Image (tube, rainbow, N blue to C red; front, side):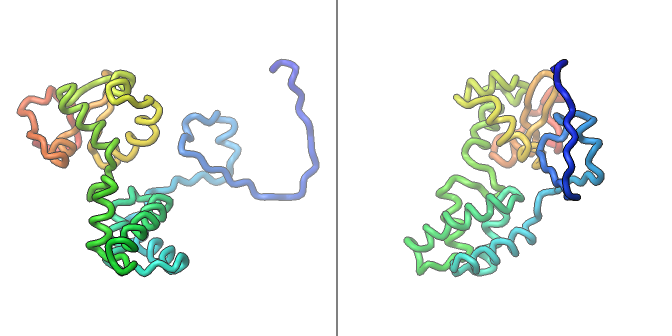
Length: 204
């Protein structure tokens, strides 16, 4: 506020590292004070496979290369999610098999957890299906879509949208969200002949 004062403090030299998923919401003066600004990309399946193999060794979970690869390709490019799925698949392996995670066990476990081959979960699919079936592919406003799904708008915006947009399944227009041709194909819906120019990222 107007009565705020600056306080000078003598500190030993140190390195400050900051991380955010919303760099655009930082004020320019704050952002510009960081000497080096880098952007981190999602991990690819090969990198995640290595991470899962290492985690399985640390946790003492027998896991084949094919099993680790199956988990990796459904982990949304995120090590944190990969490690979480590893522990859940381990539970299935203990009950359904001999405790070892292989490709078959991983595939069955993840399917029962409603995580498909690209990493979409039930909420991701419900969101796309609502746009396609409930709003003819869109566009539909975020608040309207959230109300239809019984979810908070911020949940859809922060949890679902980034991954769906990276896959090219979701488009954002001034009028709202719309499902793309790729989303129709992945979910097994027939692609409309006339999409009104709203759907992007793919050809019918």
